[in-house]
Every structure is written in structure tokens, then in C-alpha cells.
Length: 306
Ligand SMILES: Cc1cc2nc3c(=O)[nH]c(=O)nc-3n(C[C@H](O)[C@H](O)[C@H](O)COP(=O)(O)OP(=O)(O)OC[C@H]3O[C@@H](n4cnc5c(N)ncnc54)[C@H](O)[C@@H]3O)c2cc1C
Image 1: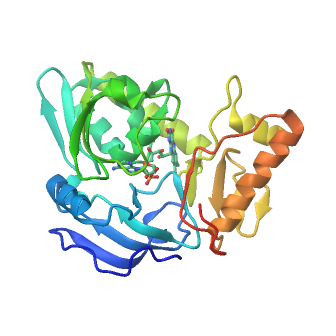
Image 2 (image 1 turned 60 degrees about the horizontal axis):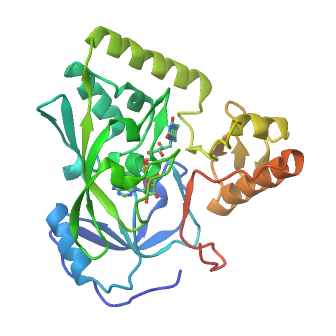
């Protein structure tokens, strides 16, 4: 890994770890170390830290790592990971829920049900923190973040704390206009009054469907590729003959062809190369270029930059 700065970082109220392993913090369980892993104490601590560090220092954020491949050569600069202190939910006037940036979407949907609020059920089946879900405009079963988000609080690379209305994020399918170095620390969601029994039944249905159609207990990264306009990525992958395809210990899931798996000892390179092989086969058969949904972060082991 290329070291960006050997000097120490400014002290913070939270925690800083040098050369920190990232693999255990991701679903795939692969990849190298972060030059610096930083867990701020609160939003102000994060803001002060970003104001003080070298403006050239790269900064990225990691949520719970359910949609990322950390490359084997690790990540230069700072990885911000919001700790548990950022996981909280408050009910507000007008059927709204305010949440911290590391709150799990699943928790929000459960609290929404307890508060008799509908429209947030889709979050029940998506593993992910609010920060990651907003960045990815995560969605399922007809719902997505763009439909329920009112505003977001974020910390910019220069340390500025800003509140953005949803319109400013220019959401599209699995896309938000949020620069890679902006960190979501808080969000405000809009629900509607609903029937608790119906909300809970919908969530139970979501869970049952997930369990039967996705490898939810495996080392995976969720949907690997975005669905191309008018197509399902899994179907193209399947029809290109890639279901079950393997490179090293990485495999295209037999259960859901748009999921890649680490069977145990895969490297990040195995998983990424398998994804590229799938893209090449789909392109050769259908002339369609699949676009990665999974974020690939860091350096390859041979030192290539991401
Ligand atoms: C079994 C399984 C099923 C899944 N099903 C779905 C699904 O149905 N629908 C769907 O949309 N996704 C799905 N996913 C993908 C994933 O859960 C979502 O993309 C989720 O939103 C990622 O959140 P995270 O906290 O894990 O983010 P990470 O994977 O850690 O990061 C994803 C991106 O978000 C950024 N990020 C993370 N936290 C922040 C923050 N605080 N501020 C700014 N940026 C941040 C990261 O830098 C990165 O670019 C699935 C994944 C798995 C493993």
C-alpha cells in the first residue's frame, strides 16, 4: 500500500487505528488494511478532524461493508467508520423518524412498525447502515431511499457540516450525487400512518422471500451489478452460463446469479476477477456492459490504484 502520510493524525475524542484490517468489517471478509481507520466521537469531532488533516489526504467512509470489495492492497489515507454512538432513532412530529448515520435500515423499519408508520418496510430486508443506504439509494420491493428521505446531514471533506434537502442528492437507480468523501451522519425520513399488523405482515413476507432467494448467510456483497435498462442482471448472467462459475474460492451464487460469494479463502482479486469474467461473458453474448453496483475500494495487491 502506498503511504500517503507518515505523520501522525490530529488527536480526536473518538478512536484512530493505524494500519487497521478492514476485511473483518465487510461482508465478503476480504481485502487489506486501511492506512488509518477513524471512528469519530460525534459529528463535531468528525468535522474538527477533517478541518485539521492534510487536505490532500484521501478520505472514504465504510458502513457495515455489505456492498463493497476492499481490494487486497488496502486503502491509502483515512477510512471513516461511524461507531455505535451514531446509531439512534427518534420519532418527530409529522410521522417522521430522525436517525444517526450508522443506524441499520432494519432497525429503522422495526421502529417504524412500532410507531405505526408505513412506507419504510422495504428496509427490513436490506442489510446496511443509513449512510451506505443513502449513498447507494438502496431499495427493494418498489421502495427506495429517495422516496422516504426528507433531508440528510453530512460532513464535507473540508469539515463543513451541511444539511441537504433530498432534491440536492439527485437520486437515480442505485445512485446519489454525493461526493465519495462526504460523510452522512444523520437523516430524516418521512413515513405515513399505517396499520401495524399489515406493516409487520409485509416485513415478514420480505424476510421470507429473501431467505428463499438470496444467499443472505454467506460472505457476499449483495447485488454485484446494476440491472441494465429493460433487463435483469441475474438473468443475463444466468443465460451467459455464469451461474456457479468459480475463480479460486470466489463463486457466482447458485441461488442468485447476481450475487458473488467468498467460499472461504477467496481474495478480493478472485472476487473482482470473477465479476470481470461475468461482465465479459455477458458482453460477448448480449452486447450489454454490466455496470458494477458493488463499490470497489483501494489498491490491488500489485500496487495498481483503484
Ligand atoms: C445479502 C444482501 C442483500 C442485499 N440486498 C439489497 C437490496 O435488496 N437492495 C439494495 O439496494 N441493496 C442491497 N444490498 C446491498 C447493501 O446492503 C446496500 O447497498 C447498503 O445500502 C450498503 O450499506 P453499508 O452500510 O453496508 O455500506 P457499505 O457497503 O459499507 O458502503 C457502500 C457505499 O456507501 C458509502 N458509505 C457508507 N457509509 C457511508 C456514510 N455514513 N456516508 C457516506 N457514504 C457512506 C461507502 O463509502 C460506499 O461507497 C444487499 C447486500 C447483501 C449482502
